[in-house]
Image (cartoon, rainbow over all chains, first blue to last red; front, top):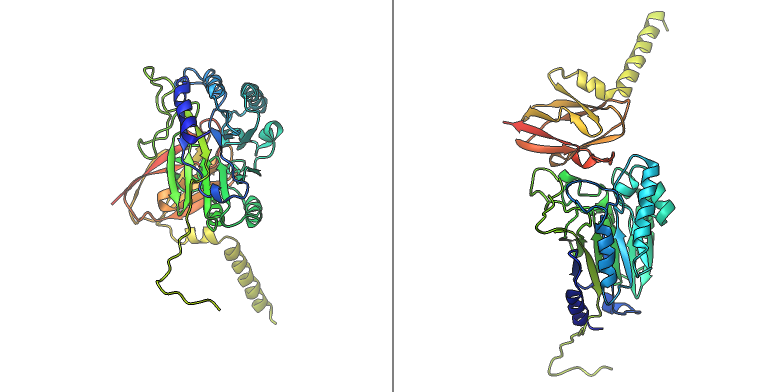
Length: 298
Length: 124
């Protein structure tokens, strides 16, 4: 399937008001030994359990999203949920009820290769205990068709720390990768200081970026800020995804980070999910310039 | 060694121990002109939520929590502290620029954590 065919199909498929965005191709995929074209979806910040004016269809949005994904004629290889699957609650029983319901709803997805990670709403009040019961480890790696994926947990510590132990784990994992390996990092909070005044940062995120910096083809996908956002730290691209419960304002655009109001004229405006194409680059040429007269090699 | 000399030496050792274990408080006490700003954090606000300082005026922020572990983060001044329940956290602070700045809790503390912030105004 060509990229154009897939995009045209998605455009024509009709997505029920919940938008889909396709990010640019992942750098370095063409260099992978097992390179193969594929795409995955990023769904983020579903906040199951939230109730309030910013989303009058709080109980319906996730189900509509599942239906939209299932309507895609070309299903992704996998789907990653980049945190805040559930909205926070002080009640551990209610937290588990929300996780149970979330899991039941997403079990309706046609794609069964689902990857989860927590947001602070899922994990910060109990250091990830309930999340692990339902979804497994909060940090892990996996490989898919030549791309190395790293899931980093920057929320189970409520101080928004990755922590020295996990950073050592990251360093050990990266040591096994080639410098030009295609690497994708999934994390909930931005690793860089996007807007510390709104807690849009990871306190020790710079340490993770420092570890990733020697690698030529690193891309980070994250959630937390409930909007599309793209930023570079050096050569590393960071892409924030829209949320699936309520949109948040652009960084610094209003005094507080309160949700944007629901627009009855444009329901689900600002919500959506993302498709990411891992493409094989069409061609690469290594150039060598020769003079008119060359020396005979002895 | 006479009894009086021994007494002086013991007194000196005791004084050094006090200085060594309570350096922060000694420093505060030595500068009585520094104003103390008491800030109480509780889920999900600070009291006071707004306060004003003079640019260049040294103050002591005296931070306490009425319930759980909280953070106090004033990013524009690269100033942050954990506020641990049942402890008083003191931070010396000299604002070196004027304006209005947000401080916030940066330790996730529950449902309305995202709304837990306040404003510092620094005047010339």
